[in-house]
Length: 566
Image (cartoon, rainbow, N blue to C red; front, side):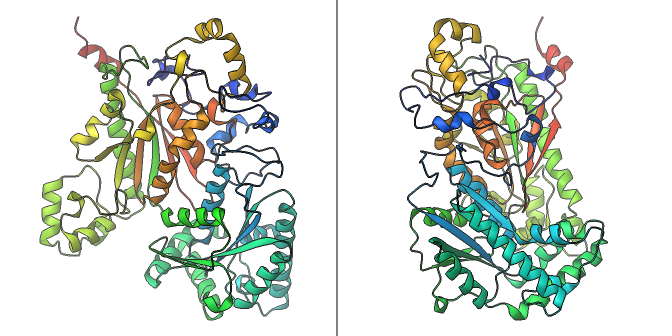
């Protein structure tokens, strides 16, 4: 029964005829009460039934900026309270500190995504969004003074005061029902940080600062990226945008006062996107410690994460640990070629290949690296720098694990044969493939390999309970999606830690959970998502939101039929 629980390949192995790779079924619209076999009580998740899922079209968009309702239950949430606040943490304000182009927005959105997944009612407040809403329509170029932490013109002073008052009023209103607010602004002067801490401390809100500090070389590189991507420069010439953004940084550099223990505030310094963290006066308890641990794993990712189903087997049964059939093998070839082509095309488009460095002489280590490895992936500037300094660096396992380089590519699979064998051609091409036990599919329990009609007939009561709450309900001796989300949480931090590309090959149930995290899906969205074998899902990471793309996977049926004897 694919709508409820499925085998490692799903009982419908003819998925190629479907037109959509991710879609919502009607199952997500029928929840009217909650239940969870042998574990959850109705009272525990009773508010879950009142929440509506996102619109069907929006599951292909990042929901991290959508408002959180009072009765919201998150996918990774362990329990609920009447107040809606968790971990005995009270109300917390996280304040970002740093110059422009130091990835404050990236950090604020990432904290929002992760804490929401845990069940914390979190909302991020971005100064840039408030400013854009205040700018008169048709005003293409704003006075530079508008971007100063200490404006001198009457218009700049008035705009800054208005923005700060509006943001602080919205944050105070949010704390009436919410728990964690993330304030994304420069906040580079000691006096404004002191005033902010005192004002919210008077409201019984704990204030914790996150200062993003980057080296000068990284700041220059980030300036180019931010100028190209910022909504402020839509329609601008690239060079003009770059010069304007540089002026914003230089305007505020003399005003910047780095945080120090003498301020008496609680803060963490976040150096170069997680290279080093320094914590001061962290006395706010579990939730802030959990956030600091998350920041230890957060990186400025350059790659994408890809989601793909495993190939088909003959019986497609949960009980049988089968090998791939001919169609599954052909699918594996198509998947390998498509993913590698997609990564190489993106590297070409980013203009970050060694072609830019043709005037540089190749060192002996580079020549050896090129001839010995014969990687199917195009080398990047990161590859060139690494090979010049470390020789055959890609041949060794980094002490800090996979994904430590911007040009890294790792494939994750579940341990089952047909899932791991789907990555066989990546292994042949010397791409790193890892089996992750957390990617084992959702355990179906007593309904394993039963059709929907058989489940309704044999387990009528359980089926009714499942339809009330598909996310939290467990069939007898089975796992729920919620159990799966708790099991998979370590992989979420692994994904955040990795700089480069990741391909995750797994069962549909595990893909739903991982996709639900990177796109901020709700409990209602996740059970009704559908992944098919005719599409590869690509999620590219951005500072403000993640982008989703669907890439067709076309398996040549004629080639498969020729391989079958008779």
